[in-house]
Image 1: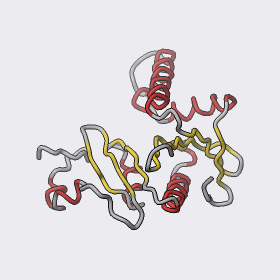
Image 2: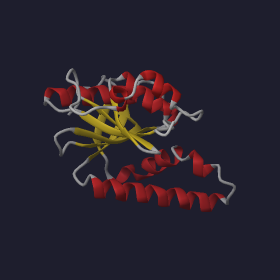
Image 3: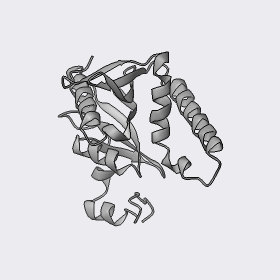
Image 4: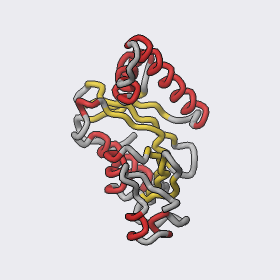
Length: 191
């Protein structure tokens, strides 16, 4: 499928992976874990949110591949990729905290880009504006912001070719973009 460094591998998610996927999702929801509520209630909320996320993905990307990311045979993350359109869509990628900052997500992303380029496709994704680590990785990997709303930026990568449509960076000069970033690091289009 994708050319990855020797220790990394992707394999289809199966029913036996659910316990790992539950732990992985919960690790991404510090916002809910910090609520001043009963631990059982918080666990139920996290499980409900996980279910809602997966139903939304299945509804919007019914043909997407769900892959477990393994490092030296151990599960370290999950990636969901939709290849059904003219471009490859990185629907979601998550790495467990203990394996973050080791280049795993970057290796997956670079492999996706190389595969997409070999097919004459681009890669698109959405990223939360407050996810600074992911945004930084995508920008360093050549993605450009195609559009933004209050929560998410839609980003696009097209290899050596430029995207056909304008991006916020093309439309607004750098000085305007910098002055439109709020103290929380979010883009404010009204500034």
